[in-house]
Length: 327
Image 1 (cartoon, rainbow, N blue to C red):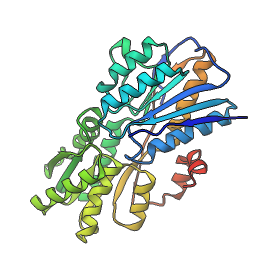
Image 2 (image 1 turned 120 degrees about the vertical axis):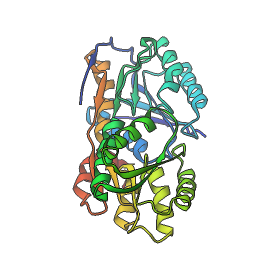
Image 3 (image 1 turned 60 degrees about the vertical axis):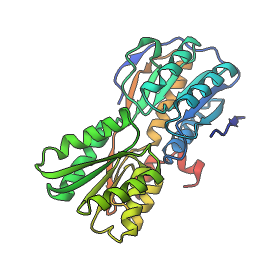
Image 4 (image 1 turned 90 degrees about the vertical axis):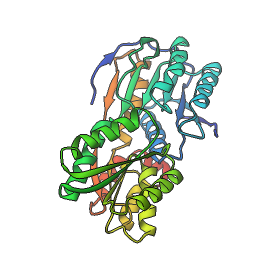
């Protein structure tokens, strides 16, 4: 099978939707748009697991890959969508910079008749004119709940917790809301709400440094992403307090697993990420055959920490992406 891939660098199941098959060229033309590859390796793993699944199904395809320079570059992502529409494509994978900010782009895609999978969100947009073909994600709120349960248990129901947020919007609200729904049940757990960091590791590092200076009695830091967790954990490591201050990320990505094995990140809620890449590929293939496509697909989490044996978990979680990425 000849696969052509174009790379353009730039700065479960709940409800069903029945859609007519899109007109196809010789190969299935896919545009893969993500909100920066610098956030974690999750977007890269979804990219490769999607392709691995398409290959497994014997599908000829082309992938055009685009990523904005910043997770908050909403205008940049809209411009990329407009470019993709103008160039012609059969399907779009859209990892929005933010849920509401994606509405103008989704309206344009729908007007152009381009079937779209929205990734990282499991709530369809209420506006029918902006509603995508399918929404695929590991829901943020349950991940926050699982993180909160781990934190409460580790603290024995008492202590001081710092929460470092991502960017304003649904992701931070739900990951934070799920976490708070648990820890707020414990009257002896005090929560200090830190600033937004735009999911940027350097900003998370600075925020953690400042917050720990102001609150030296912090017992645990909950970072709402890989980058936030690692940025905060780096500060704690440099302070020589990795054994005293527990640090948490979100996603269970490769860098987080490495940090846990090295002993300077304490825990993260892990997504069997390749499951979602498979779901994306299956949605595209089902639509191309005129079959039902799930409007919503949601994956489950596994809580891992520095004491976990993650090898078997990762063998499954990265079964498609690891051969492609070599890690």
